[in-house]
Amino acid sequence: MPFGYLFTVALAAVGTLFALRPISYSRPLGRVSYFFGLAANELPFAAFIWLLLAPTALAFAEGDIHSAGGWAVVALAALTTIGLTVIAYRGLGERARIWRAMDAGLGAGWRAAIDADLAAGLRRRPPWARILFLPILKRRMDVRRVANLSYGEAGRRNLLDLYHHRSRPSGGPVMIHLHGGGYSGGHKNSQSLPLLYRLAGQGWVCVSANYRLRPQAQHPDHLIDLKKIIAWVREHAHEYGADASTLFVAGSSAGGHMAALAGLTPNDPAYQPGFEHADTSVTGVIYLNGWYGTYFGQGPESSPLAHITADAPPFLVAHGDLDPLVPVAEARHFADQLRRTSASPVVYAELRGGNHAFDLYHSVRFEALVDAIEAFTARVRSRNRRSVAGAVVHEWLSSP
Image 1 (tube, rainbow, N blue to C red):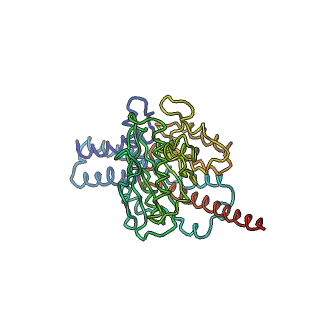
Image 2: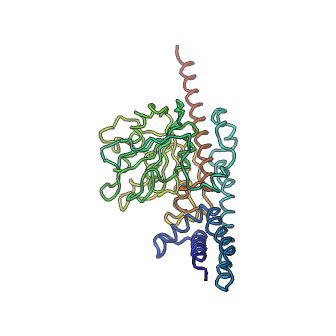
Image 3: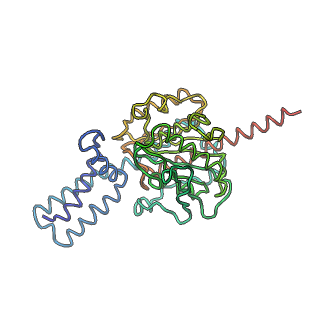
């Protein structure tokens, strides 16, 4: 039995199985299922090349297959390849499904309504070289990361990283992202980095921040930290070339929960102790693999659902239909409630075969979503420009 070859193939097989049939996180083996399945689900090409194709070729070259056990491993590799093919097929179809969700949320003709200067920067093709060969590598040579800037008094839990183009263009919009981790773990510089580096490469100023965690902190401490980040950005982002009048907040899992709360409670003094007069309104919210419920036994006011109003900002919500931590039904319910009440656009993209934390890698799925997020923000920015221009014209016509 070629045990080295068996180990790599078994690793791919287990990951593929859990990607196709994830186990609820709360059940036995749920944690193992999540971590193994996530990697295979988002990186099927890498799993095939490095855990199946290369080891199989090496095993044949070294003569390790001349036994019943060796051929049994080859058969397992073939079955795993079929499973990875199904996973890759689902991911390849994600782009079309996401764009249909954009059409449903933004209405017919939304592409033509994007201002020409913003439409020119939108990406048309997936970055295949990075997806196939460098899916884990996040950094870009044209983007500078300014690490560990302090925005509050909680030490390392109140530090943020800022990303901007090395040429430091002026007037760029801002994207703030908060990591996940169930409010008890996680750190900046971990999730949604393909999104942050992509936008920073297009002239945005992006922020990824730590925040206080449980059990030392409780709701609304985390939300207050995000409000502090927004206030800090409005005060300092111009130093890095940003125009913080256009500011989107995004988050993954618990970070998405927090971003939604921030977007739905603009300038609420209850969540801004000591900085009540700071402008914490946002231009839009990007809600990724989120949590939609209440905060660890607290009342309904700790859920974004309790704060939905007609003047909610535009939302893009993305959730995987195989998420083992947060059932997809909760995402559908939130998006439905938001659509029923809000006057702003709401895009709900349900990702077929999507797991939790799908935003970790340069995968086919997340790169398609990154392109949609960039298009969504361009549409919102174009809409806001016209609203401002219309208000200026109205004021000029109304003046004596």
